[in-house]
Amino acid sequence: MHCIHEILERLRDVLSSEKNSGRIYDKDIANALGMTTVNLATIKKRSSIPYSHILDFCAIKKISINWLLYDQDPSSLVDSTDKYWIKYFPTINISAGGGAYNEENDFKKLDLPDYFIDIIGGVQNIKNIEAINVTGDSMEPTLNDGNIIFIDKSKNNISKNGIYAYIHENGLFVKRIEKNSNGNLNIISDNSEYPTIVANSSDITVVGKVISSIGRVF
Image (cartoon, one colour):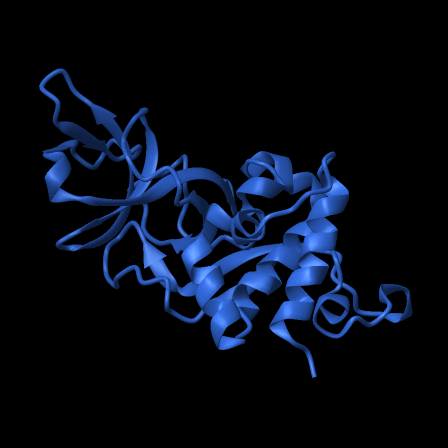
């Protein structure tokens, strides 16, 4: 039976091997797991195991979940973790509206090849990336119907012009957004058949910035 304290010690060993000083504190473990020190303290007190955080950690570090949970020798495992993955929401469609964005929705693990990691910001940024589908033609030819887009949720303010996923009262959209001289937002469809919309920043909720996509080219 695996114990949270034993798991944390293994996490400490992994992080210590990466740090010159070798001294690892609880705040280092919490940061590596993507949680606060308060959350980590609560987990230790309750002797509970944050499985989703541990899975993400193992995927990023490319280590065996069996070793971390059960202290099983990774060399004896056939299915040790060797891929990076992100959350992919196949039931969420963006651009033509409809539906809502909720990170509690069912998601699939989308395995990514090593060479694609740098494109989306490196291993350290994987936890911020989620993938959803594009529907409609409003962003053609940049984004086409059926494309999968990769959204960096850490970039959820319009500090720079770019393509963003955002929520409006009418649904979930992806558009090119630029700040105009009045401080308002120009919401632009790359398809010239759609008009540019001017909106106040308070009218929308930015989910994140689109940093890459895969799909058909027309």
